[in-house]
Image 1 (tube, rainbow, N blue to C red):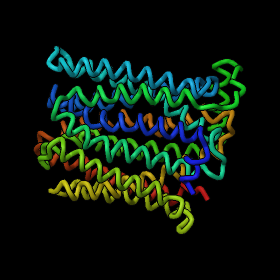
Image 2: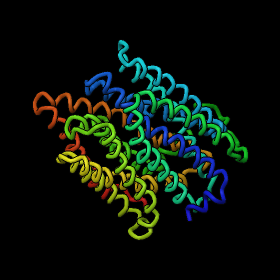
Image 3: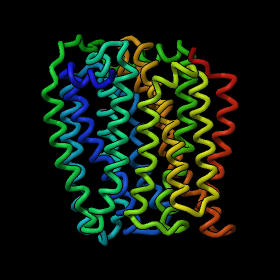
Length: 405
């Protein structure tokens, strides 16, 4: 059972605890950061820029980050990165206390970029370290449990809690996040692992080794490209989701937090049941159903008038996303040699996540362009409807070109 990992494996227990704390903090920030941006401006392009800034480091730094991860003590790297994130969030807190400062939204975008840059190292190191902590046959269960914790704290608990805290003061969620990051760094520091032989062939040589491996594995490359397209579409809608909730559905910060929590329940459900679904339906069927869920869910949001329906649609979207994640992350961790995992994983995430800032900008631009012709309501809806169409086309491609069995 997955729970036995927490009972018997101290290192996994510490990693799980650190992840739970940081994900709770991320859940606070995921609502508080865009909400802070909307207090500074109602310009959809500026708000989209803040969202894009947090993801832009995946485009710039994902590939070199892999070399750093493979050549560093991953335990120390995660702890130090969390402490760095705490310092950056302190700066965001200071800005939140003076959100009327000239150019505040652009300063916020810069801090979001720094926060995202630290996150690139942290996330890559955590995924790379996991196979050193749990046995190969336990990867699906370990990943499922980690994804469940991430969604429970980061989406189910964090956003509605942030809504309550924002009502008391916009800076409070950021202050709580600082404390959580410091505690998480302490837990990670306590993890005990056997020393690994670091990569010492030189930065350029080490990087080329990862690139060469990726080029020689067309299935892995194809999977990364499919994820990149999916994340581009998803981020385009996520960027303007808060405006959709405010302007179209008229939701408060508290109500919007519960919509995000519904999505988290879907994510938890998907991650917990992914191993059983794969065993019963097969890997391919589960991958196809995941993409179908993304398309249907976004299309439903595009036509709804209800926050409840939006929450139900996001439930399906996130359930599909977590099934996809559990399958593909575990598949990669087994397929890629441990000495190359950090570098190849970073290249994979360059394709898969590097598209996200482009999608974030695209979402804001689509709304800005369509608003003059269609009005704000329909412009916001159109982004979700176009996303549904995009996922439909992606499903057709996957049916013919993406087979992991």
